[in-house]
Length: 615
Image (cartoon, rainbow, N blue to C red; front, side):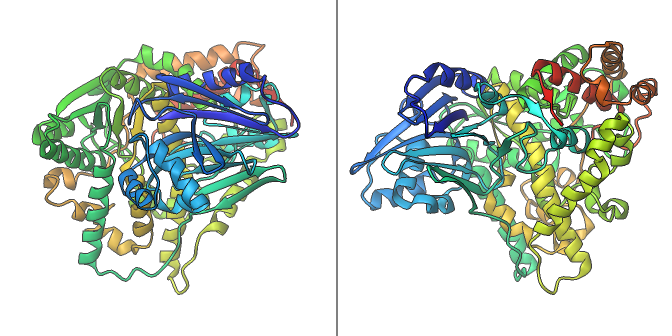
């Protein structure tokens, strides 16, 4: 993976602006530690940081290509998984290649097909192409939003970047949040409204969208979205199609010129990916597959089963590693390093995030990076196939709000009266929820029950999945590790979207159709293991450490957090028993200790980014 950034200014000569471009680009060094590159013309400045994965010698960027009298320059973050198919088609049309990189294939595809090239891509990407003759910039983001792409308009300038920090490094972009930004942090966070950049005047190109920028302005367009249609395949055909799509997606994503491994939790999703990868490694003589898992010091003593985490992963990891013959690496995180990494995770995300859920992933990726450069991970299967508890529980299914964040009223009580009146948390969340439901592609004649399930899937794919993809991208890239997500393959997402609920839940099990499709690939006990989410620490020392951090913030009269919260109410929460955490206030993992860390991390973010609040 890589980091991209740049800007257009129609009224200024940018030929002397390389120092600014370098500052912006260097904020993305962790995304691309292997090389840097710049391209500047009169009105355009493009910067790139590279993480070498495919064709280290031939895939350098920015990449410029001549076609007749036209000149095109590309900066690109991502991977194409159907590179060779596209290359063959382009070669048949007369194009010649000087490398075997997907970068050159992507650029040549745009030269040949223009915007229609997006229809041909199977991959994860965010890229920008400058057309010198037309004086036009073309930007695009992959269908499911695996790779990020932010932008800002400042007068005659259009700026863009892989991460917020690169935009904030430009002198015309200031770290300001207004009423909506406050609502995003305190009512929506650690999620983010799709397309919202939190900082004032910063937005994100949404998944499945592209933009064109020329002297006439900025035009945003959709090139992909979910389409609802009757599912006409019978059960047997559906099972076989799911199996084919899953296997093909995983196998495609095993292409790499650098070491590649898988993450293994012993659950259905990661075990499926690992089993397919191990089979490919054996077939192709690539040696033993390396696998990685994470756990926390003290969890063997402190873990207690609950509705959200029914069992521990360790025995299942050992079971699958032995079954597949992988070279397994068990990484254990201790509380002090986890607490220390909370601040690193905020910098990686540029926003307050999922606290230890973020920080632990960063530490995990940092350790993996010592041995490998690319990993395959099981994210998105739960959103695509319906694995979360809120797909099944009537109280969550019919809650009339985002099912992973049903405590908006409780969260409002953390705020100062002025902020509560300003952002109106419950109304803000209700508005975002209603906007999302209005987007759902309806299917005429669908029963009310099936229509509600379709809404639930849309909410999960467009919101919760993107929250986890944000997390995966920022934490892995902060460690210079490329993380691929086979269950995000758009062909699989499109097909499963229209499978009826009763078929998705074959035999009455969550993700039942996926389990049935993977029979013969996984042992039955793993195949039908009850879902357990990403592991978190259960060590009471973590709760005490985050409580202490929050109390230190509350005791500091200079804290920028204090005017925004009800200090007495938050102090009362900090005095509560963190072990009696109750229902998570976000997702499945964020309960009282994570609340302590979230509020303290807001203080750290406000200070570190020198955020100005102009509501």
